[in-house]
Image 1 (spheres, rainbow, N blue to C red):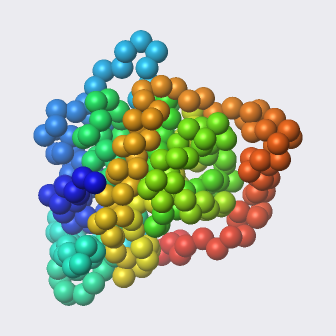
Image 2: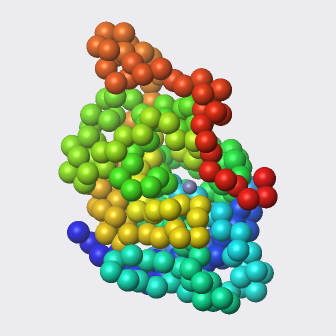
Length: 297
Ligand SMILES: [Zn+2]
């Protein structure tokens, strides 16, 4: 398995970022993109897209997705002064320490680990696209304003925004993929032990993509733990596993379009009583689920 690019990881993890104050992470992405001569785009809201390679006729990009904001409000002062978090590794685990106090603080693996994974995957494939959304933590504000023309160049999307080995089936009540799509990638998910299927995740950008675009989507673990807390850390080999898993998925699926078909799962569920038979949770059920605390809201 390829080793994590620690220089890239350090540059992203050390950058403090809060919803609507993501400039330091976006600058680190821009720098990495420029070093690789990738094509950088920004939409009207300031979400950032990075494209690599040219699409041939009929081809579509694999889209790698993460959000650039975190919830660690004690980083606010650092953002103002352009300060950096102190990132330290111990036994394959990365933690962040606040430079002013020396105390541990959340590393913001949710979802800076996803950002790093997406960039690492892009660096290892011939053609693809990353989509980095702002202000996810305060209600997917960025991805609600995604650029549909840019995103329509994608043929399927993978977000890295879940703890451990999780794979989300529904996010925010939105079904992410068809059973035929899952069948194609199931052997790869199994191989990399991305098999902790979670029925209902409260929210992340991928649901907004699935709603607005016509293709299949996936949300998987990014190696972060204790998210939204001051003890948040990331496990390096889990990030490496997510990179390897996504690389194999892209290898299997290629630069093609995988349309999401609402009807397909309905038919399957009628005929076969497959896992697609699970009902979409109603809005009240989703709203009643405990959401993580968002300071200041
Ligand atoms: Zn997240």
